[in-house]
Image 1 (cartoon, rainbow, N blue to C red):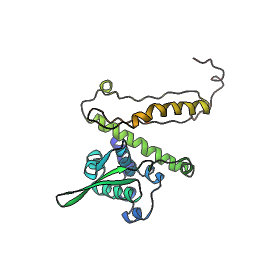
Image 2: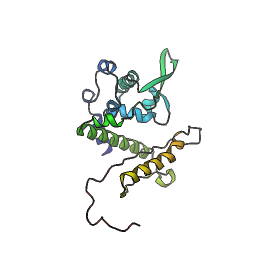
Image 3: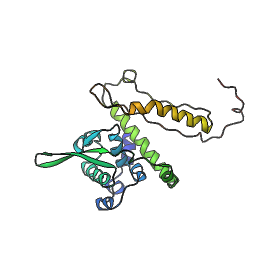
Amino acid sequence: MIAVMVDIILASENDVNHDVVEDRLMELRPADVVLHPVRLRIVQTFLGDRELTTGELRAQLPEVSAATLYRQVAALVDGGVLEVVGERRVRGAVERTYRLRAGAAHVGADEARGMSVDDHRRGFLTFVAGLLADYDRYLDRGDVDLERDLVGYRQNAMYLTDDELAELIGELRAVLEPRLALQPDGRRTRRLFSTVLMPDAEPTSSRDVGRPER
């Protein structure tokens, strides 16, 4: 199932990849990254202040062809999403090291309001496909132990007012921000922490109103 999902998202060269000239002529909006499956996978790989060469990217994203990867890295650099932080000569060729520009791939509220329903659906599907690919790579390691590796996924439902939800988000930000600032030191493991937050599609039923709090 995971392989099929990735194949559907990646589609064919003609469906997924834009002409390199077209990519370089336009400045990428954050939505251009979120709605493009290969670009989003590249950006996600750089999360955590990582600095990677295209060779290291290829090792991280084996499902993406080399030609597609190079094309989209170039588009992300020209669009201001990635920046070159180093160069060195390797067997006569120049090898560049890249990193993600802070906030470059963040979709703000104004831009999100300008996205269509189909845009939001595509963006979320691309995000979920990335999660599936990440989990598939974890399972492919062979030595899988969810308890030892502190791996988990779950869904909870809460009844919160907008103010209570804003308070919760602020508390989570206070917990996460100092840990997001931690750098690799040889002992730390890069861990993926993904969030999805949305209201229930079903309205609160009359049975829920007045229910005593626990």
